[in-house]
Image (cartoon, rainbow, N blue to C red; front, side, top):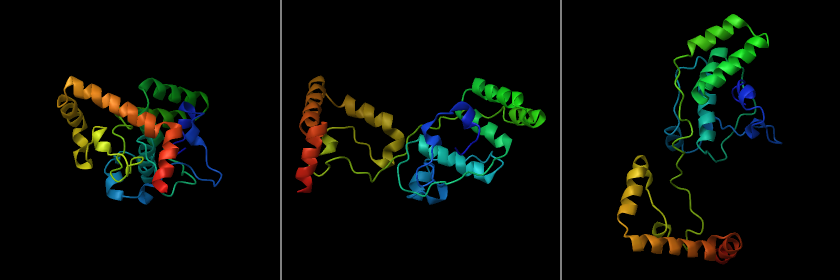
Amino acid sequence: MPFVFLRYLQPTHYFRLFSKAGVSVFPKVTKLPDIIIIINQLQEDAGYVSEHARDYDMSWQAVQKGYIGTAETYAEFKPLPVVDEYRFIRKNFHAAWVFYVLLLRLFSFHHPIRELQAWIRTRGVARAAIGSPSIAYPDCALPLDSVINWKKHVVWVEYKDRKNVAQKVFEFHNALTEKEFIDLQHTNRKLWEEKLALGKFFKSLQNVIQ
């Protein structure tokens, strides 16, 4: 894991595992594709002492926000200053869990002065909503988009309007009458049954490929 303190809070987390190739799931920030689109949705934290910690934090954000891709990932993680470890868990976990980690560290004979100084130094760090908003993929194709006009079935929000999603959803529903909304539900249910249910999807996909 990019931050050692995660072993106290998420000891069985699936993302602690490395693949058979010996790499983690955490992407190297400098290797992320579509750098402008992706990085603009990740927040660099200049409060970290270590540059490695800043990069690891952004990599963690990418995974939490739903990053999917083939960018090069970390095969190893450098040791970080204790103060950066405390900063990270303060951003991502409740204060009670941060205190729990402090106690574990003190009772497991880590340097008490260094631990307390790092814990006190990071008291002003606010908890961040790391998983929101999710990373947007404006060029990602929807399933069977060559035969399904998705704009007739969903609330369609262009990437440039991503910051106004709530308004777009409101406008979409506000423009429908009660009957139109019910008809849309029936249409979408029919779409699911005929093209998207497990067996139907692969049959539809085969027809498209042929």
